[in-house]
Amino acid sequence: MNTNKISYWIAGGVLALSMLACNLGNSPAPSVPLPPQDSTSATEAPADNSSTSSSGVCDNPYMPIVTGVSWSYKLTGPVPDTFTRSITAVEAGGFADQEVFGSGIIRQSKWTCDNGNLIAVNPVDGGSSTLNTEDYSVDFQTTASSGVTLPSTVNAGDAWEQTLTLEGTQTMNETVIPTKNQFTNTCKAIGIESVTVEAGTFDAMKVECMTVMDITITMNDNPIQQNLTLNNVHWYAENIGLVKTTTVGEGLDSMIELTTYSIP
Image 1: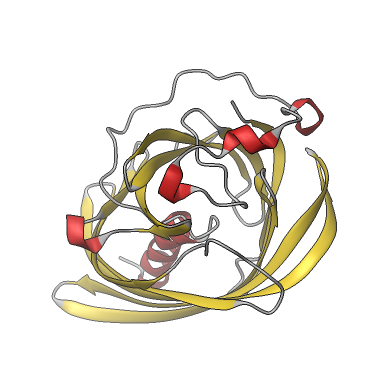
Image 2 (image 1 turned 90 degrees about the vertical axis):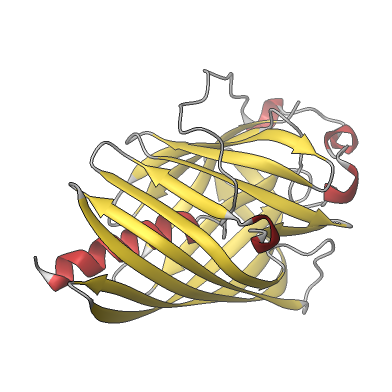
């Protein structure tokens, strides 16, 4: 089996779990599509957004955490697609989310919350994250985690970091590939910028992140290592969430743009 092709699968699987606004998670819900939901354009969103953050310890100005909230995005790059992300459950100390892609990929995960700090992946609960398609699947367990994914407050000049170690398998056409990914995401808030996407024009906090992944796969008992470094820029609009992400590096240049959203 071609090693370069295997590395591409590994990179693709890891990126699907980590690139999309760093949405790594645990304790996935069953891998079934979400029921159809009505999506509202940005100009039709509720005028009083103060009612959209009602989840206590999960209150965060840059990500409304409410059951039923959804965001639809367009992904351009090496593998163009569309996907809808939604909050499927909010509970004491955390919430569950799910992404459904137009290509059929489904990703589910859980987050923990600490006074507004949002943390993807909780290794104490034996956290795992899954991704499934017809011929390809990923099942990673979180074996180590530190730091925060999105802080409770974000001001220009603030910096934060999250490190994760994921271990598990990727399966392609019944070939099972043991995988380990050590992931470090280092971010710095730049300041408020006006950004225009299909969903509208937003005053959004610009956040620059560098993502470093050390990937090890095992084929025939032989470890194969690959290192990836990506530069990501995220724009978060207050009381709306992520509106845009650009990624540069490793031939994986891509962009994610918000197309519609609905906040109950």
